[in-house]
Image (cartoon, rainbow, N blue to C red; front, side, top):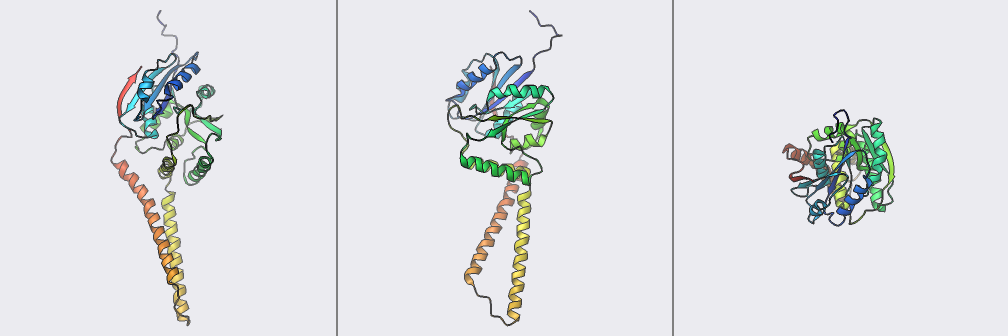
Amino acid sequence: MEISPDVPRARLLSLVMPAYNEEEGIAEVLAIIDGILDGSTYRWELVLVNDGSRDGTLAAAGGYQPRNFALVLVDLSRNFGKEAALSAGLEVACGDAIIPMDADLQDPPELIFQMLPLWESGAEVVLAKRADRSSDGVMKRMTAGWFYRTINHISDVAIPENVGDFRLMDRVVVDVIRRMPESRRFMKGLFAWAGFRTVTVEYIRPERLSGQTKFNGMRLINLAVEGITSFSTAPLRLATYLGAVVAVAAFLFGVYVIIHRLTGGVAVPGYASLASMIAFFSGVQLLAIGVIGEYVGRTYIESKMRPAFVVRSIQRL
């Protein structure tokens, strides 16, 4: 039986899921999502991006036979990192709206059905905000709070606090993100920079379904540095201000030494204090050089115009 051309097709929604070494639980994740989508009036595709996994993530995902969504497997040539893998998924996704989510189900798929009415009502971005971070450790909660306060204080772009990559974005938003040329990507910042009509839903983030997080402390620090240097030049201005303060202080101290000597005082003693000051100001100089180096390094990498990722293959199952 042919469908009349007057009958509109259901809108297509894309789930984008970067995955790295998720062999242990990926089939169960796909099965859970399949069950949640059962009976939906939308058409669905799930774009799973294998980010250079060293285990059998790709084979495990390819062995699953979905009933309620089309499965698209994007295999990257190596591990490029989550931000690049997410970018690859956005490039491949064909939906009228796109929803990035983690492969560990800490982004609950049930929340999507709270996002959809808001999208249908005219919102172009629907953020999923964590009502609390009880599933994170104490140190991670503290450092996340410091990061958001810092970057929102020094950046011209307000990055929503306690909001990850999990969100619904209209096709027009994703098309803007795809046109952004930079290869070093801080996706939360790019999403915020794009703007558009935005609403928020809150949720409580559950524990991982299986496995362990791939983000260790050093990766989180690097991500924070990436975010700050991508969306603010405040560290450069801070180095300038600090240099000015140090120069003024040194000048005033020199004036004090001269006046003290001319008024009959003795030469200012203190070899140990002088050595300490030299060491301190040398450290300040190295810190400033390091800050400048971060920005010069970013400029150097971007000037090469290398792609953010390389795709080995795309399978549509």
